[in-house]
Image 1 (cartoon, rainbow, N blue to C red):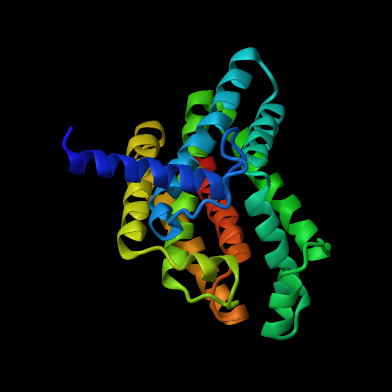
Image 2 (image 1 turned 180 degrees about the vertical axis):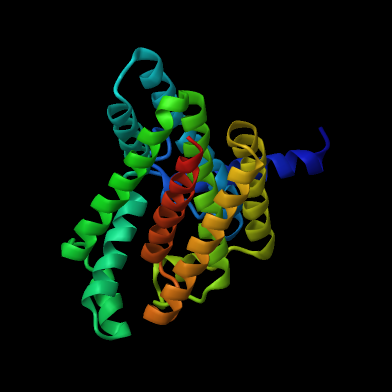
Length: 264
């Protein structure tokens, strides 16, 4: 291995570690949050982290199906595992965003509510619906095979994070000094790589397990939901925040999982 190749490998490992620190609660990454990682570059690894999260949940789906657990129980356990691995990071963002958009009359008030750690009615309902829809979609897929359900979950976790990177890259920060603003937007290369990895996941997982037509429908769902989220963020708060990005991940993951259910 040449020095240049070694440097590239070390950089990729550092980016993966940074993405794990930001997006998960995996053992071994806690306590390293203050390390000055380059999140603008590390964003390219967000879909890879999504693959890891989805794969762990996918193991639960496969094992649950193999041991004869009811599909609803199996799906609930798989979603619970993904929530535990992320520390409910994106669910928290969804709750804050729903509270802000639902309870604020002005942009400033929306951002103020989103910055409040307390959860309100809109946030509670949004999180319940998010979990309910993901569990229901996976429960519909489990009977056709744990492997196929796992493929859908892995794709949803990965592609939704790729879409999140794209929104982070394209939209201006709505709150000066917020997490998304302090980290800075992903650089162009990171955004392109994140989208490319997401597309590769669809090709490798969705087409072989669900077919080309399902893959096209799934991609359309992700793009449509992502565009809808970006438009909503601009109209409501003038850009993106860390909470809004988390909300977009939840919405896009739901979109892909629900899009796969007609092919069960």
